[in-house]
Length: 100
Image 1: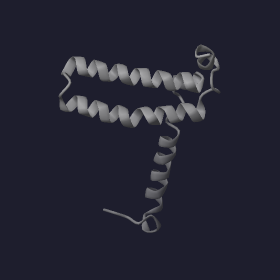
Image 2: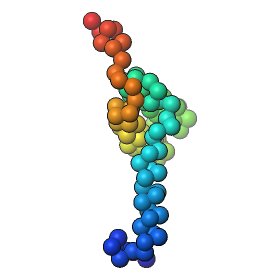
Image 3: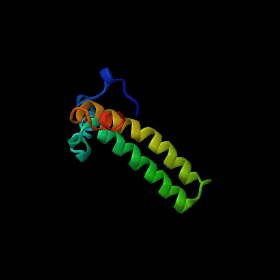
Image 4: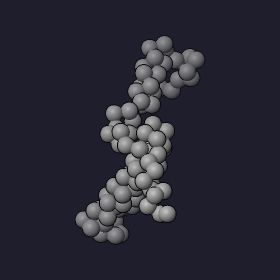
């Protein structure tokens, strides 16, 4: 049964607000955020590629599950990198020293 927010029962609006607040804070316990953000972003990329490679090895390179994995990593990795950029420690200078 669809509701317009202004016409919805107060309890429903409050329940949805609690769920949205919890979802907005779901990244906070991630160990990834204990690192510098650029190292955390690199870790997300490496883990994503590893997951894709494992899926390819196990299921082949032409399967619906691989397609799903590619789509999921394409959506999840940018979100995790954004969380790292916004909430992890400041950038490490290690990467800049490696390439000079």
